[in-house]
Length: 134
Image 1: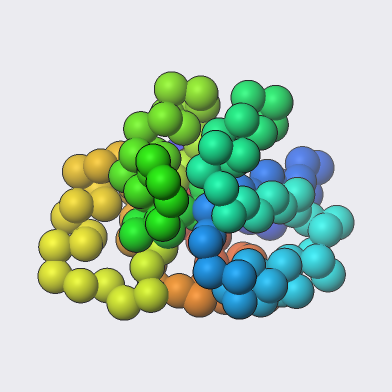
Image 2: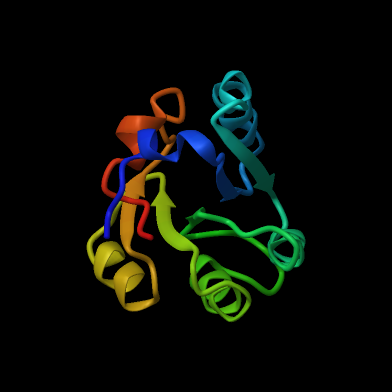
């Protein structure tokens, strides 16, 4: 069942963002800060930190860089690990430029959608429309 964000009036949407680019992390933080009455957001530049935090938080949506840079993790590896911790999280792949095969690889790897970044977090209703699955 797909539910638009405005239905979550009683509950903050918990968003995890796995992003290694410092500029994008800064931009996302600036876009989401004014909306803290509607969302609880967590931005991680370390897959380990985000996965550890998932043990205590229930992410509604996780935006994960498909080409996440890290010593042990790429975006597809993060999805596999996160699914073990939380099977209720909707996982969205994000990439700077969607290349041939990215969408198919993302969906076969466990993502429900692949979108280009930077993401427009300033308009959460539009961004999350059709994404949150309950």
